[in-house]
Image (tube, rainbow, N blue to C red):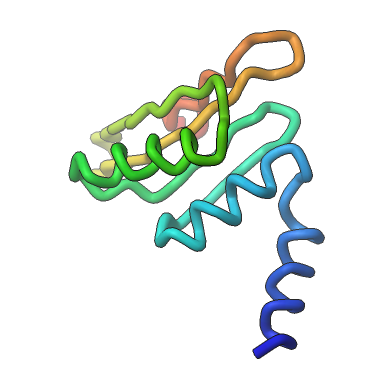
Length: 111
């Protein structure tokens, strides 16, 4: 069991930037699947399942972690050409310059 914990910690150390590592780890330990994160842009994207308890739970977790400033945004996007609906929950924290990451629209990614 101790070996598995060490392997898990090594994964976080190798793949998650230090600025947001503790939040990513806490989210995953609380059943939230993170799919993308960035320490310099200060955001974490999570799979979103539409129910209020998920957003409230994330909010409560961040408050318990004493994160002072953050936003939680749920974004739904539909791309008619691909018949694709994307749902993502984005948690952002202020960057060093005080601004927040605004995310990427699928319209910017898919022609």
